[in-house]
Amino acid sequence: MAYRLLAGIMVIAGLTFSSCNKHQKNPLFEDYPQLNTLDSEYKSAPEVAKANELLRSLSTVLSDSDFNSENLVPFLEYGYAVADEQNMNSRKASFLFPLIKEDFRNEKTADRLYELIGIMGKMNKSTVVLVLSDGMRKLFPDNKNTANLSAVVPDSLSDIDAYILDLGKKIFENPDNTGINRATSLAYVDACEAYALVNPNNPNTAGYLFKAAEVAKSLRTFPKSLSLYDWIIQDYPDYEKMPTSLFLKGFIIENNLGDDEKARQVYNEFVTRFPNHELADDVQFLIENLGKTDEEILEMIEQKRQEKQSDSE
Image 1 (cartoon, rainbow, N blue to C red):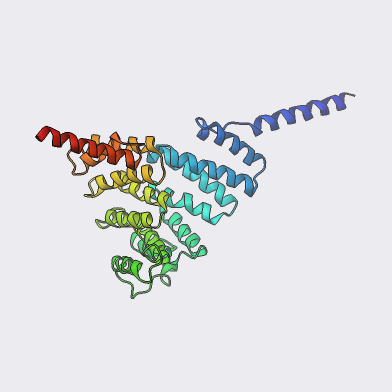
Image 2 (cartoon, rainbow, N blue to C red; image 1 turned 180 degrees about the horizontal axis):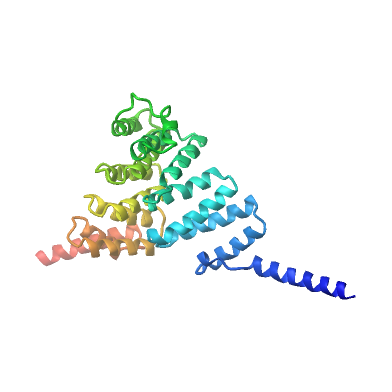
């Protein structure tokens, strides 16, 4: 009888412990109850479907929230760990790339970069592999994995900048209905991103990011374009086209994504930071006319023209 009673107590205790463990909060997601719930569900049943749901939600939080690098890194490490556990190459890359960018001084950067090169190879991203491999050879010549990259970057390719410039020229060869070659354009955007990752302090980097953002905009891959403009805005504040990048960010959000309120925030940031910029008046005009149709704006312009004409008579 005593044995059965003790066994019953142990079962109840075990169930209680499992229940508590199942719903234990992850400190990382203290301010994100949905992520905490998905994290608990994934830990209780670490399946691919649950991992996908968790990582999709995490990616949404990261894109919608304003994190600084220090706060962002733990989220990226978490996302990478889940994707790695499930061997999801595309997901791994989507967290590993920004993790390297935001935590570049980390002692793990060389190993992370080498792993990213391997993932890009599995995804047939040959242009990215080439640019990242060239960067790793220059950044970490003594790393144990660098010697393995000698076959990736041919000795004939001594100037990676010339390679990217040449790739950019080929964007207009054999164009499709968008006026550019889509496959080459995508490769060019990838190459510029990869270059920026391994050459953050190169004077050419901000320019490559700006051109890549413009090409991404032409391809109508607006989230990519916005991420590139944000990269410029955050990391290259002294770049001559940084204000233009901020303006174009707002313009895409308004006209291509249809989010007037978010566009207003970006436009207001522009006129606050750059009140004397040549685009300041245009941005102020856009702020005053957010939400109006083209017909309404044209009518207002015509009315103002008539008012000026009357005043001059």
